[in-house]
Amino acid sequence: MRALIIDDERLARKELHSLLSDHADIKIIGEAANADEALELINNENPDLLFLDIQMPGKTGFELLEMLDDVPQVIFTTAYDEYALKAFEVNALDYVLKPIQPERLAESLKKLKKVEEAEKAKAQSGKLGIDDQVFVKDGDRCWFVSLSNVRVFESDGNYIKVYFDNNRPMIHKSLNALDEKLDPKHFFRASRKHIINLSWVESIEPWFNGGLMVKLKGGDKVEVSRRQAAKFKDRMSL
Image (cartoon, rainbow, N blue to C red):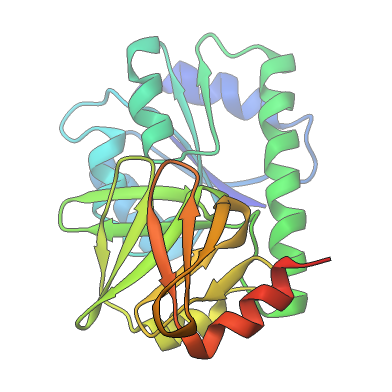
């Protein structure tokens, strides 16, 4: 994978570059000392992976990600553990504390390999599966979200509301277009307004006019239209 190292400390960049020399599947294509340099590099080189420091002069690593329209895989590298929660809120691939240990770096790259394999499977099927991660941006906030954590997509005019954790960001997309991209083995079009993640289904009960009411883990309820009810029963039965 083509990677960039983004860190304001020259020695930290040099050390990471040295550690990565033991991993032939990672090619370092550039380095940056701040977010502005990194933004230019990312736009020019289109890397697959960022090794990204958080605290840098000027903009932080988080602010850099907010400036990107197409976000690569991210492994945060930092000397401070207080940013770990926020890092995982944006679903970074990993969060590695400095000084970086070779064993810890190898562990991160194993995670990366699993993601790569999932993406290859997605490319072969042409669909987004339960193990895929997607980038969601709503205004100034952004997240890397595993589709396994998304329980519902809800149509709202020309937008879709994405339900995961306690978040409900809005993305500018039609539910029909999204339905075509999602793997039907894992996601079901419940109605004109909703797509549900089947792994989140907790219980099902009959509803008005031949429809169904599905209760999801966590408490959300979604109505399955009469038109889709028979198909849903078939999918969820032995």
